[in-house]
Length: 417
Ligand code: EPZ
Image (cartoon, rainbow, N blue to C red; front, side, top):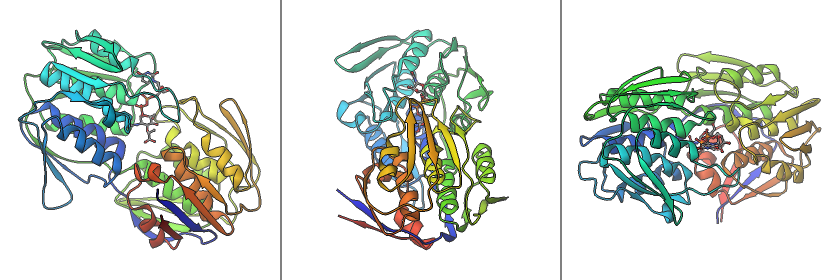
């Protein structure tokens, strides 16, 4: 299995381009199931999760062709297998996003339950409850969600908690349902809005996307369209944190500060100069960061996907701060690995008290999930000496060409077997 070998101590300097958003690309690829006409998707990131999703919809009958540039043309005219098998779903929970579109387009679906993952149980009860409210008959048998619906009917759905993929699944199901659907307590994440924009370009009638109340008026069918995936705000935030932690100065292009207010605010609180530009964002770090308290909440508050990266920042900042994780029940697994690098972290339930130290020392550490891996990369870039990060397949799920981008910024990092 691949490992990442990092020689720490070099401040990051220079410019790097940000890729398309993984968490927008995945639901948008599923949206191709909703129309018999081709969907052209551009600015797709080259990530393992995107390849997995393409394999998953490919085995359903979606024809995937290159557009000769950086995009793909997805043609689901001959959809013949509305099923998502366990061996594919177990590697990527976001596979559950095919459930709503398959039910809407084919009237049936057999999708493996995703099962838990390292950061939590992550059930999909809200997805199922919402689809049942729209008239789907759903049973869970032998680890599979088996669903039928001659035609889904519009309904008013209030989810028990804010769920990003739950909102996305229900929105995709509703675009072809009979009548009007209202999703209350909807997720406001920018990736939900990007999906809604793609569906609208395909002929869907959606209003309120990006707010906590989304109204969808169902139509008979959708037509083809072309959509560019939005920039990845979490990749953007990750590189901003890496530059901050290493006392560097970077410019990130093909991205925007628009959807990162809470993260930019915390970086400024930590002492960074952050400047939003029309096509990007510039950060200049202080000589020593100040520790900042962080509490994760649904958008537009501080994103849980940036929690691990800020823990790494606080490890080398001046002072102490508390990181509170309110979304997932087990998203502190990077803490014990950071402690191996010399960090001072005390965990109490979903609170982590981090006290900054003068420096971290390189060691061998193990990645446990996608954003935990990013946290270890940031810590390795700062630590004195060599850090070897094992199981970096987690990293490859969500960060395109990370060692190439970091090398461009002056880091000493290479992939080793
Ligand atoms: C999405 O996951 C993202 N993944 C996650 O990013 C992100 O961390 C998460 O939203 C929160 O922002 C994609 O978009 C592909 P949720 P999702 O449903 O939709 C509970 C990354 O690093 N819940 O918003 O699975 C759930 O257990 C990944 O890129 C239920 O109980 O998250 C969690 O505690 C990690 N029942 C909370 O709600 C349900 O039916 C929020 O989960 C659904 C969710």
